[in-house]
Length: 314
Length: 246
Ligand SMILES: Cc1cc2nc3c(=O)[nH]c(=O)nc-3n(C[C@H](O)[C@H](O)[C@H](O)COP(=O)(O)OP(=O)(O)OC[C@H]3O[C@@H](n4cnc5c(N)ncnc54)[C@H](O)[C@@H]3O)c2cc1C
Ligand SMILES: Nc1ncnc2c1ncn2[C@@H]1O[C@H](COP(=O)(O)O)[C@@H](O)[C@H]1O
Image (cartoon, rainbow over all chains, first blue to last red; front, side):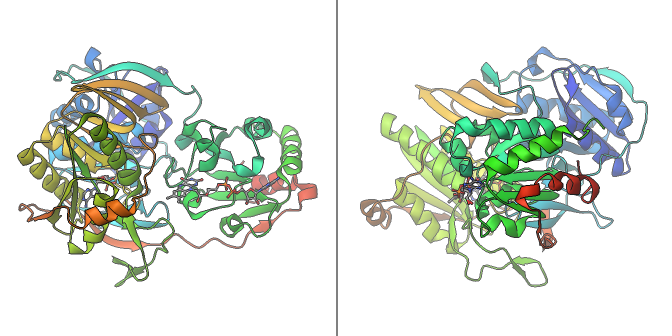
């Protein structure tokens, strides 16, 4: 019995989170078939991270993001390959497709896995908005797992994956895509390894230059607290927290953010948290690994200057 | 339009998370429960706005035990017309979805709304499961919805941005931020909610596909290491040489 992985692409590249899903599947110790939707210039990467085989799906009906049809294609691929487990990334694509697969295949679903299945078959996933984990067991023969981006080691297997076209018929979609608004070609926040985030302490949108500069120097993505996006100082897709995006980068730098529990809910699984705040009593310091008590408008330029003197190419 | 809004009961966002019974049960001691924010703020309120503009009926559906009734009454106080509680302790998404889709199929709804995810289990799974079981289109993470007759124009969050889609009712939608503005129930709503119908339905037979074996809390953070603001640059040295992450 093999494992099937849903591989989404954007701008002709395999999404980083999809490579993590492939590596996750390979580390489960079974043969891995990657089902690739869309063109990918970097196809060899799939083998590098553990795919034994790549099935390329080209069907004009699947050019748009049609969760029902993608699920249908994946089900047919699983049948053709004799796979009993499907692994997807826990990103906006995987979150839409996985539950459809689960219901159609009568396969138990664990969303947001942060670790490989244990010998007993339990899978650890984040619950209570990052405040705890649950160990979940799937009781059905068929299984669906979505993997939280940046939560597992992307182990390399350096296989050479055999590539085959997979001609699949799918039904007609009742969903018509009218317009797409891709916010930026940059790395989506959920995939970023470093994030520089700022809150109401920055006083106004005109002050975000230093945040963007620091992020640029560090090679980090930018994020913000909820009031900041509510006031339209920053775009909504940057809003992290309980009601926004949940992230778990290796480094989260919070600048002028008080550290309300609802904000923490979206970021407290970050590996290292740095807090910069002029109030030594700001609650965020309790969750921080490193802290600087000081005025953001003085501290951040110093960090930018220092970062400029460092080499970030490796 | 007949609209079904699925709501779940979750701990208040500030609740302290702890577990009992050998880390197998959520400790509800002293915990306040609320309607899952996405269900209340976005799915329910947008459903009510559609009803106010075009007429129709908004039904609340919860799968849960009698302990959930006060939470369901709150959804009625915000303005839903009636409520249904399927009398089962929901411990598995697929089984919960089966209850909801069975009820929804039998009772013929034009629109079925869920929240994008619950803030306790963080499943993000019920909407898609219900849609698949009902064989309806699924619009995930909807941030705007307009109805023109039977046709909906919906903005949804997709990987890397947003997208506008058109779909005819019936369909299933999961609601994310942007769909509506939260409403606070007023006194009249609260009074009216007391006499609105809350029908209890027994579940259909169904097996659980998953089970939570245990819970755990994240490892506690060590003490925060402070860097002097005057020499802020030292921070980056620490991140490189000590934490080894840049
Ligand atoms: C149900 C619910 C859900 C919520 N969901 C979210 C969510 O998903 N995400 C989220 O972020 N919030 C969320 N909130 C809001 C949350 O409770 C806080 O109100 C919010 O996070 C505060 O944002 P902030 O830290 O930017 O602003 P503030 O709380 O105003 O904090 C600003 C901070 O900046 C510091 N500061 C001021 N000037 C400077 C300076 N010159 N230099 C350095 N520091 C300075 C201050 O000391 C203060 O600590 C939610 C609230 C509720 C009730
Ligand atoms: N027990 C329940 N009863 C009714 N609706 C529910 C229940 N649990 C979850 N839902 C709905 O399904 C959505 C997604 O839940 P989940 O898949 O658990 O994250 C929620 O936002 C609710 O709208």
